[in-house]
Length: 223
Image 1 (cartoon, one colour):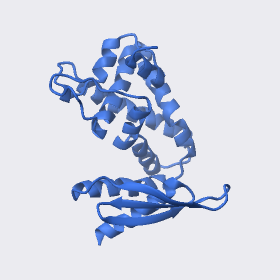
Image 2 (spheres, one colour):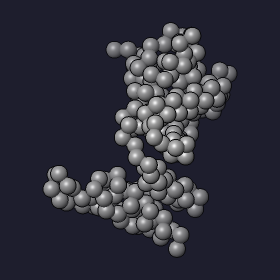
Image 3 (cartoon, rainbow, N blue to C red):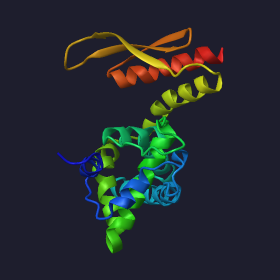
Image 4 (spheres, rainbow, N blue to C red):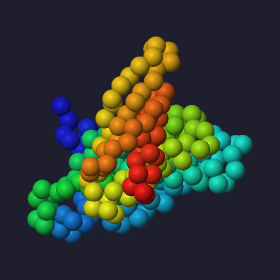
């Protein structure tokens, strides 16, 4: 069985030569350690955006600039990067200032960007191709299946989460209330809850129902 760092690299799809570079990518500024991942995160942000833009430009030749930008925003937003970090089991390095790190969404997203920059630096002359290969493995199916307007449906949940935070409410919770219909044409009813407020949504998938519920709850909060 490999070490946690080795296992992480395997799930990312890259074998590091410089393990100190990998450790640095996983070290947030809050750790208090001298070699944190801030500089790598700066570089990784640019590499990630460039790789996503190249993939979208290649796979969506008929799309205009506005739609391409919106799709890229979906792929590289904090929530999407946090999900990627969790999917590969990314663990942060603790330090004297924070022996038990609180892995916030932004901290995890920053570490994911720093990890891509570490791949770039570790790979030498072929650094960007290595980053592009990793991003293609992660994003290709999503890009190929994307349709204009997908971001509007995602934005309802993002907007609700951000609005709840501003108002000091707990994060939105989504619960599946009912699944009906035949297997080839299911219907889902989901209830979204923020504090004492609730709203439900219907959809042909659980995700679509969650989006509808988020939009309905946003309207209630607005009232």
